[in-house]
Length: 266
Image 1 (cartoon, rainbow, N blue to C red):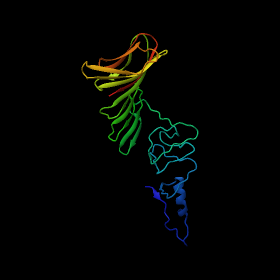
Image 2: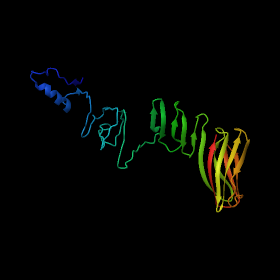
Image 3: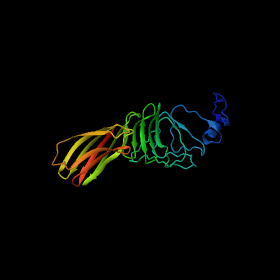
Image 4: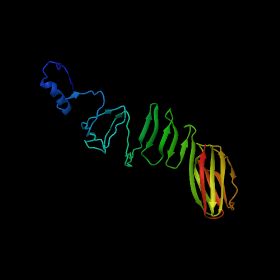
């Protein structure tokens, strides 16, 4: 058991003995183990080194500010880059005046590389993979209210009925072209496509609204457009059901069309 520094025997008129002084020397040089409690401020010039293989927790109510790297004894006794586990209780402020970056590197695990937890649960997480879900933001119940996927889609809103958002640009030539084919009819009942269609000096914008009955071949759509610049009658849109997806297609009578589309499904 660690010792504690004691003032016993140090009184006015009595002789100060050697152990009264050496206990402080032993405590601060590590000769003997002492529990030390500080009240007030502590200023350290130099490094703070923990014991290797031992968890050394540093607890604070406020930020720790330093001009240079902090050395840690975990992970084999090496300084930063640090390998191992670390616990910070309190606040941590990372600040730099040299345009340096804070980088978080993962190992390819499917587990989140970064998780931010609030007092009521997980708020935000980023996964260490580049396919499927990339990151999400959760509500108080822990369910996602915003999720970003590797196929360029984003879902927003109630987890039981999210709204899908994405955008796409397609270069279309004469004939039929698939504009967007990624709306699963089992998850969504309708889609809204806002678009611009341009070829040389011909252009128009518009909106296509489509609705379907899941599990059937019943689908219908309508289109509203801006007035033409030039003549865009050579390009037409159609929404069809193909397999398990609703698909936006285009048909061009001429070449060199650029179709930009914003997609929303509910």
